[in-house]
Image 1 (cartoon, rainbow, N blue to C red):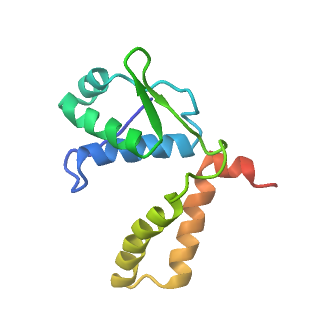
Image 2: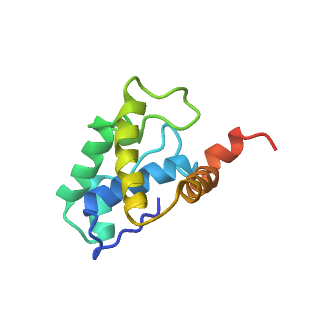
Image 3: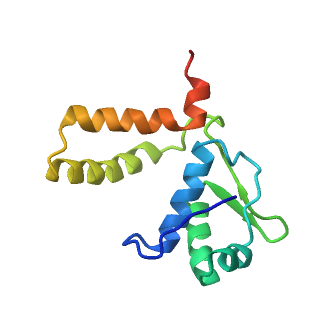
Length: 134
């Protein structure tokens, strides 16, 4: 798994790691059962503290995206093809979406432009392309 983080970003490193893993799953690069690098290995690869990776993995675990086992390590728990989202996910997601759309509104991005960009991003995910008939 190739992960790119920006050490100068305002987004915390653990959040960047979490986001890149979620994007890799949506892109189909990681599927259910895929093993993630150990916290120590990923930390060494990224030249960061392993506690930062641990925080990202714990966030992914709490969100039900990965499972962590002492023997097998961190493994992807679900992929886009594994059925409907857990109860409550859509409401929590909509609350986060509200903030992103508020930022768009504050910066003058109109409704149609925001919708166009949302559709563009959704269609960019490999899993979405496979679900959409051509």
